[in-house]
Image 1 (spheres, rainbow, N blue to C red):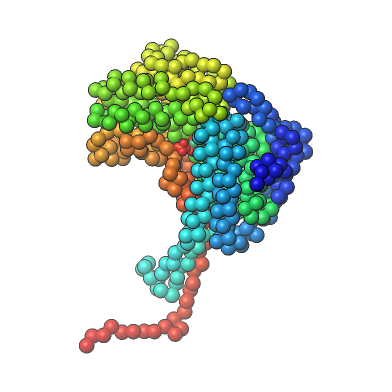
Image 2 (image 1 turned 60 degrees about the horizontal axis):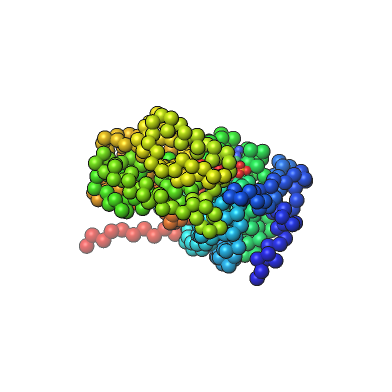
Length: 500
Ligand code: NAP
Ligand code: G3P
């Protein structure tokens, strides 16, 4: 089918509507938000700026439609997810093109984001149908007998609010939608404003796949205007959020007593030991630090090398960085625009602060429009902001230390605790260091990354709350229901041990 024809009902001209009760609607506010391509500033489209009254209507509709969906047999819910995966795969190039335009992601990565989301839908369908409960006999506990039996199974939480970030706007909303649906919940999705258009397409995709009207709904508008209202709404039963630590911490304060799944910021450190494989380490660091111009929560954001290999590693990384392609996301250049000019100013501020305090510029520190050149800073010290703050841009600081213990100390001193990396040939030592690092995940001889998406993915400290990853997300979006059987002794067979 023709993409434009298939998805035409989402918009009037270049203005996209929000999706509620199976219908595409214009906001009563009459206000829209214009979205521009961060690379060339061209208008990509307009989205509705919805208000709290519309939030009430949408959330109430989702609440009314939990039962019809949770009563749907899970094998049918799974089939809907598989159909959705087929549709997004069929249109992955069209959707990838839109994604590239609205957030400046390299086209090849943008298309991969769509396909990765299809994989998540398929794997969630499979995992969901395997989810079950357990039966526990009472006599395991002193004073109780087998006449007391606990039976558990999983039930949905109700209405799940899915809020995603700009850098993976389709994948990091889809990675919430799929587990929420397979668990039997209804959904209100609030996509990032910059990056809203691609996830808006879930409205058509899921309707075509068979999700009943009212089960999946989308509200658009600035999080700063409707975000607090959404997360604190009494009819919202669970919030699955991905975004900055600042926003996530605020959300945790206003949400009230409801389950939260928060995937927040990071400052992932690569500790490199003397016996590390330099080629593997260099490639992992450069790819991890600079793909999507560093706009990944799991980007490599600090390198902490041991003295004996620091010079060689800085040299190798710098050489590799000079080969990175820079320019138009439509040509899949690795280094493209940051999401907006304000973010560029912030990143430039970190670079300037480091250089003013004595950091050594090895490459970069150049800006054209919203493109910041990949920047490598050596001799970064702990009095510099870039040692601690999350750039969410193409900046890589080397913090030289004298010992492994110091490397662990600096790594753990961060407010963040998403992932960490250890590069060494000594796996025993790596495993021992891993136990000291205060992070959710430690990568040994690899770059920090969320995937593969069935792995548990979590942040500690300011990096998050709860665990994402297909099975874990389904668990987070459901709960056990317990039925206890209290049997009588009627008809009980009393069998004596044979002593003959
Ligand atoms: P952000 O500014 O925190 O926004 C994230 C989402 O929250 C957006 O949809 C935003 O809406 C919404 N929002 C804003 N204020 C809100 C409020 N008061 N209540 C509820 N929602 C609100 O983050 P971002 O700039 O999109 O993404 C970059 C950040 O996300 C980085 O810090 C990165 O590390 C983090 N991130 C973490 C992960 C992870 O898995 N750990 C993955 C990706 C990104 P608007 O767009 O309308 O403001
Ligand atoms: O910032 C997005 C976060 O989820 C990282 O995903 O797969 O690039 O490590 P990935």
